[in-house]
Length: 120
Image (tube, helix red, strand yellow):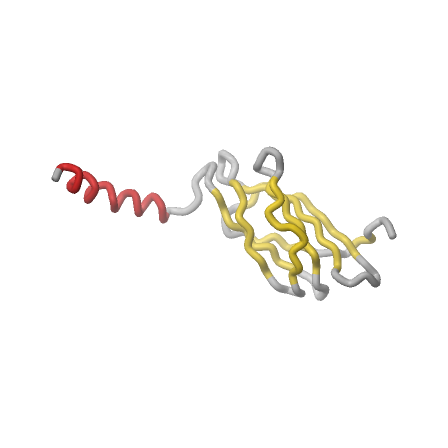
């Protein structure tokens, strides 16, 4: 009986804590947006893990489409990722990459490939 009373008291508090969002050190979700008219192959790396973890590997993202990824949050609840992107077609191949620190849960990261890939 004592356990049931204790559980009845704690259950609402546990549900409230679970629904309040991301706390420091918890996971977070970030949206990756292909901000171009070209289809892209995208890689995303979570830089808050040691070693960095690849959370998206060669994902094909259509023009102006979005995909969500989960990241680890640092001690202050912020995310940090690095992305690379290449156009899908072999003709006129373009590339892009960027480091994105200080992300919040629910942020959108725009990816693009508008630079020469530097090789044949």
